[in-house]
Amino acid sequence: MWRWWDLLNCLTVNFHEHAYPRDEVHGFIVDASSSFYAEFGEAITERVDRWLDEVHASLDLDPDDDEGE
Image 1 (cartoon, rainbow, N blue to C red):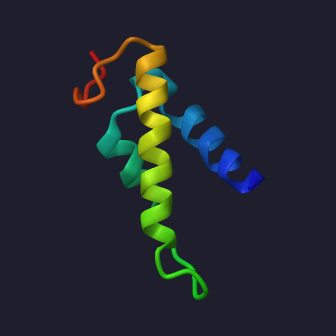
Image 2 (tube, rainbow, N blue to C red):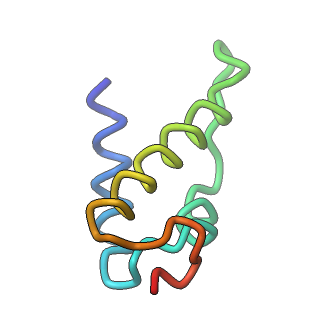
Image 3 (cartoon, rainbow, N blue to C red):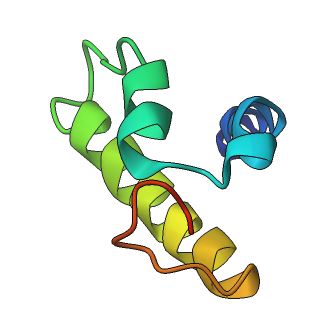
């Protein structure tokens, strides 16, 4: 499961200065697919959304505010 953390670290590095705008973070992930796991892309989206909720809460940001303000 360490690969999840690599993705989240990559997102952290790319979006920390912009307060993690949800649409841009999801747009950064071009393709998440698997020949063996049909729901892989959906699982990635759900995991990233949970992570974004945690990050926004820790920074006291409104998770529905795409600008992070």
